[in-house]
Image 1 (cartoon, one colour):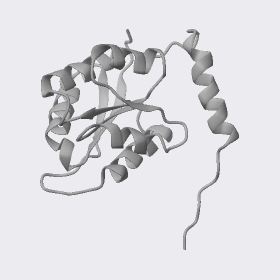
Image 2 (tube, rainbow, N blue to C red):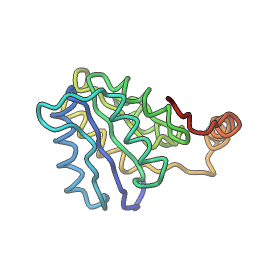
Image 3 (cartoon, rainbow, N blue to C red):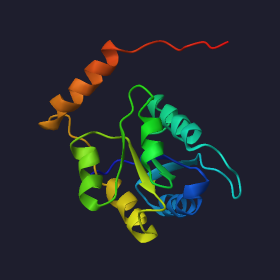
Image 4 (spheres, rainbow, N blue to C red):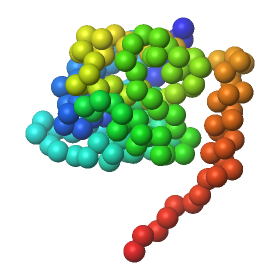
Length: 163
């Protein structure tokens, strides 16, 4: 468990709007959280989940925030989008064990939840539990995460200019 004070981003598309708002409120009240940045849509706004997932992941990759929570209908699209940003590890979580292992085994900075597949109280509980986990760089999982990081660094490409 950690005593760190987190800077957290929360983002959603319209399918995750209600959960996003509840999670933002919870995080604003949590003493382990220093800052909450809301990247989600406003009521009635329609934005592709990928735009939100990418923007939040870029905030994590640039160290604007430490971690993030993404919410869409299933959590899957948000996790896929976020994982396209170099240096980011994101995954869906749906139970306490996947939440714990996302950090302790995989050093994920982003968890994604599905408003259509996880109940609200479970989603809120998972976020609360997730705040208490911190990756141990001396753990046996560190070398496994290192394989991912090394691959990403070997295959990094610069920005592509369209037009």
